Length: 168
Image (cartoon, rainbow, N blue to C red; front, side, top):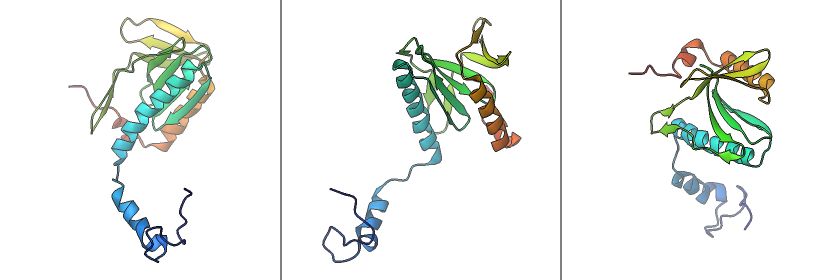
């Protein structure tokens, strides 16, 4: 069955136009989703999407709020948080990894494994666990640095400081 036009007769056979009859009922039935719930669903959805791209060994990247996702042709995928330069690997060698993300109705908590910086126009990662350093030459460094600039322009300093909550 095709989509019902707003100005067509309603399929319930009331004789009214769809926009004055059941269209409003359809809108009322759909539960409204809060922005936090949308972000929560979208973050995990984006993690799963980038993992799928990594399994297929496709090079791709995209942004979601303060997050940057990318996958490489060798099957690695990373999730980067742009305000504090934290990151986690979500796929390695074409195999999806379980992301250390804990979500509830109010917060999204990520156990970041690395921090990142740029050295000689390459992405350099430092592990939080043992302070080991590694370079990722296949990372989309230009796109990442451009995303950092865009995000820092888009949000005020107050908003950026509220992204992270102090640890107890």
